[in-house]
Image (cartoon, rainbow, N blue to C red; front, side, top):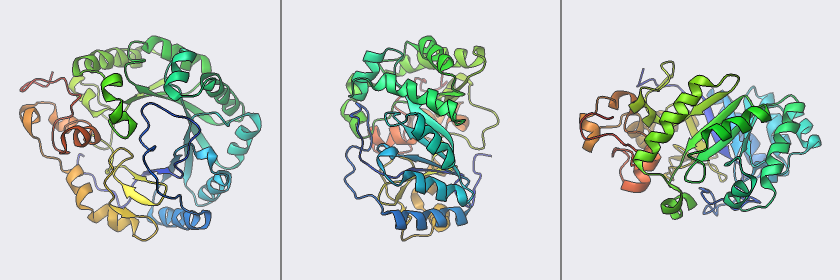
Length: 337
């Protein structure tokens, strides 16, 4: 099923604004200076997306709650039949906002928390008190009847604290804990040497994370990194091999530019002026991502069929070629172990 071709992406990750009240050490959107789409243009684009057959929209940013019309945008999206979710830092979500988000059609909200230690999270996010506000946001969202998750960017500040992060997630009552692999995009590239792990350290982290995933009850631990195929840990039920970007999902930036994912800064069209289905079908960049060719140590690796070279964004950012092996890969030249 590795070459499944949908008529449109199942999910669109839509950064509807660039401004943010945080100053995160790994942010990919701080360097984006384009203007945001106006409300009327954005609503018209959402209509186009729904008509194209997209199933769900996940709003991000920036911090999406800094858009004063977010609730209207969500309600409109929901009225079109789109399943609506959001990623937020949680700062602006009090009891009243949580209720308003529920009324506006949000079915799930993910809150970013990068350490179980408040001071470590606050320093990483650049705002004192942000850890406490994030946990409070989860409580308000749950009380309002919205499904919640925690998103954690794995890097040097937290890679050895899996048990503590799981305990925090269980205490917060979230349904999912997302361990996101560190990307070298935007400030993530600038701070790579300080924050990123070595390939061998990634192997240790994923072995421990997979063990936690299998042993922890009442919590879905989600691992979005294709290179876990090296540990025979890819979900057998997944629709595609390798990365889902450009195969199941697409990214739209605040100005309407479409990119394969939020961490691949290659513009393949604009949702305002271009036909989504046509771009999805005919983009040369997407075609290359869907039909990656093994190079280097990937050529002799027995896991390549499942992994497809790992994270395309990381390979492109650090080597300049999306077909190159993921720099996080710990595999040898021949065995992939």
